[in-house]
Each structure stands twice: as structure tokens, then as C-alpha cells.
Amino acid sequence: MTRRDVYAAIEAGGTKFVCGVAHSHDEILDTTRIATGTPEETIRQCLDFFKSKAKQYGSPRSFGIGSFGALDPSIGSPRFGWITETPKAGWRHTDLAGPFARQFGVPVGFDTDVNAAALAEFRWGAGISIAAGTSGATLVYFTVGTGIGGGAVVGGRLLHGLVHPEMGHLKTPRAPGDLEFSGVCAYHGDCLEGLACGPAINERWGVPAEELEADHEAWNMESFYLAHAVVSVTALLSPHIVVLGGGVMSVDGLIGKVRREAESAMAGYFPPAWGHDHLNDYIVKPGLGETPGLSGAIALAIDAAQSTPSRERSYP
Ligand code: ZN
Image (tube, rainbow, N blue to C red; front, side, top):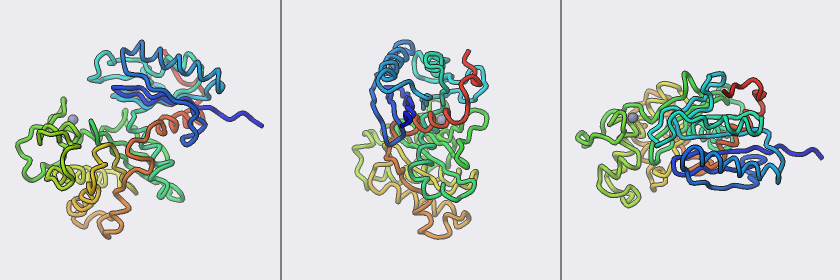
């Protein structure tokens, strides 16, 4: 019997790093959580975990890292694998992938946490319904929580462009009755994230989002913003499906409100609005749960192992 590949995965967040080793997204062998401290100590603790697990399960075939950003996911770039601009103290201009590549001598798939989640949803979650037999199947994934992020998978590959999409920072029209609120985005004020992330809801209504009743006016406003984000990506990419995840989307009935607002904003022009049933299949919740956990990083690791030998990647 041949030994099965082991993949190493890291979900790198601002408050914690989740590390795991797995055969696949649904066969995780071991995980640990490490509080996010300085880059040096956090990376050292992660390396210690993976060294110990390599003794137990065998050396990993590859790594996948889905990280907070902004970051450089461009293979061939001198700063591939780095976190670049970030408000997270101490983490600006940090080489996150390099230490793992050097320690284990294997390929590292490196991308934003949002892109990683989008890839996992495409492959194993809500995207299953479109991925099979649809040439150029396109999925857009938004996460709505402490921030808002969005990524796209086109024909099984993540859309990157220059670096990676920043769909959380697109501009939407103002919701009726919300003309005064200045928004919470540190860069843009009233971009989508600035108006509709969890902290924006807290700031606007003076109470934490999770304490607002499901029939509170806040959710009509929230659905207006999310619907306009969906309509914008519909106009730009014509995806087959738009997945809305993240903690805020767990509010009862919110996804239904978003569908109704989107139908209205589409004004009958875009195919998803041509039939009501179609919209129910077009704007959907994630298949892997509100937070995809390590699935995204495992997807990145599998792709890294299959696509690029480690020697072709540059780790300064
Ligand atoms: Zn912004």
C-alpha cells in the first residue's frame, strides 16, 4: 500500500493561527490553535507543530496558507508569500510562506483567507452544483463578518489580476435612511465593508450586531448593501453562483432579504433575476458552513503540490 500524501495547512488570522495536517479537507489528522503574537514567535510555534507532526504522520507533501492580508500571492514575485500592507501591528512586510518552504523544502500555496475559502467552496461546497460539466464555471464568494472580503474562482482557478480582488472595498449606493453614517473602513469610510461589516452594524445602531432582533431595520439596510455588492459582481463577472458566508450571514432570514433586494436592484436585466427560483439558487449560503476552517488552506496545499515543483518558486 502506498503511503498517502499529507498536506499541511494554516489559516492565518489576526487573532489566531489554526494549523493542521490532513489527507484531504474531510480527513484532517490533527490541528492546533496558536494565538497571533509577533511574527517571529507565531511562525516559530507553527513550525514546531509541523515538525512534530511530520515525525508522526510523515513529512508534508506541500503547505497551504490562507492568510489575512493584504499580501503577495504572485508566484515569481520577489515577495511571493509575504504579508504586505496590513493594519495588524508588527505584521507589515512579513515573509510568512518562506520559513515553511525553507524548513520543509516543499511547495507552498499562499493566498488570502478569502480566496482560500472561495476555492474550497468551489471545489467541495456550494460550487459542486456548478463545477461539474460547466466550462468556465464561475463562483464568487463573500465573507461578511469583522470585515468583508470577496474572491472569485473561474474555471477552477482563483482570479488574481494584479494581486487579488478586494471586493469588500467596492462602493455601493447608500441605503434609504442611511445617508449620515460615515462608515468604519479605515481607508475609505463608506465602502461596502465600511457600511456593512459587523463593526459597522455595531457602530450604526449602538449595539452589537448579534443582539439585534432578526426583524430589526438594521437587516433591511444590511441586505440592501449586500444585494448591491452581488449586483456589482454580477455585472462584472457574470458568475454562475454567489456564495455569502461569514458570521453576519447567520442572522435568520437575512439571505432571503438579500435575494429580494438583489432581484429588485437587478430590475429584470440580469439572468438570475429572470425567475425567482433561479435567484434562490444564485445567492446561496456556503456549503462548508459559515466559516470554512482549514478547507481553504488544504485546497491551496493540494493545488501547490500538483502545479509547481518547489524549485521553481523563489524564496529569497
Ligand atoms: Zn474600504
